Amino acid sequence: MIASIAIFAICYALIMSDKFNQTTIALLGAFLLIAFRILDYKTAMSHVDGSVLFLLAGMMIMVGITAKTGVFQWLAIKSAKAVKGNPLHILWIYAIITAVISAFLDNVTTLILIVPVTLTFTKLMKLDPFPFLFCEVFASNMGGTATLIGDPPNILIGSYFKLSFVNFVTHVAICIAICMLAFLIIATLVFKKSLKATAEDRANLEEVDDKGIITKPAMLRQCLVILGIVIIGFFAHSTIDIEPAVVAMLGATLMMLITGENVREALQKVEWETIFFFIGLFVMVGALVETGFIKILSSRLLAATKGDPAVTTSVILWMSAGLSAIINNIPFVATMLPLLKDLNASISACTANGMVNNPLIWALSLGTCLGGNGTIIGASANVVAFAMAKREGTEVSFMKYLVYGLPMMILSIIVCHVYLHVRFLGH
Image: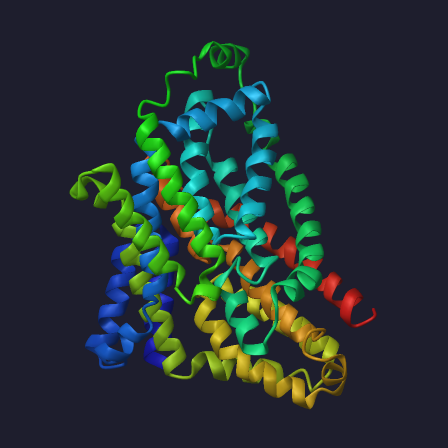
């Protein structure tokens, strides 16, 4: 356990320093864990979430092929013209659209679709893309928190405690709406000075002819049909019993087949650096789970609450947020679920409220989903969005994101703290 903690801490510090490539460090950490026999190869690989990796790869291939039609440039120009090139209006529109779509699709998938449009718009208007990408990342994680299917931790929580889509909407969506509004107001104040387009850039925008931007209309129709089928598959995956990752890879395969896209070129659209970063990170977090560190940490922190429902709810919320900003929230949630079940049985106030109205469950959901906003590697959506931006020439450091992300994340958790205590605990 000590060795796994040391390796994770050193690797995390190196990633934070921004002096080394984060993928290289994550893979080195995974290698050391296996080389020192802290994890055997089979156990290490069991913690690599293939469904996440295949979902990412499939969506990246489809977006890469679709981008060749010019549709993302067309969307960027149309949306910019609709608000007369006002960057602040675009920031709000893109963030709200991202949040709404993320409530019904996987938030990573949503960002893979919205980031190319954003980068095209910011290049067109000669703006810094960071404020837009930052707000979209936050919005995607917030929107994903509002429903059962929007974020992987919610899927695990819903399945374990037999909660429905409606349960999540009625118990969490109001809190998320408040968080989203507060976030956008603060983000506007923080980024307002950098969200200014010159009169010349606005005039150039109006002169852009958007009629000839879509260069391959027939190919676009094929791509849109396949994307539509994939999105329907995401919605219906629990009904048809097919994982979203399988749906995404099937869509990518069909798109390559029907459009005649060169397979080698299509595979080059996959952010392989991001894929391998996740592999290394999954293994390092897996070591913390396997050695019992996460379980011990959770048990000791929760034992300190002495069964008080209000204190326990607060501890779960803030602990989940803090840890989810550092480690992947999926294994953390998986570890916490049986602990929550035991706690519910021992805390009379929670038992009396029933599982659906149990504040411990909603504290875990809000903490894990929103806590990932705290750092650039805290959630899959964050990693993917900024990896795509890096490919287009916009690199954001760990510390730059942290300066903006951590305070904003803390603000959202404060809102959740107040909401949970007023809604479920009566104070």
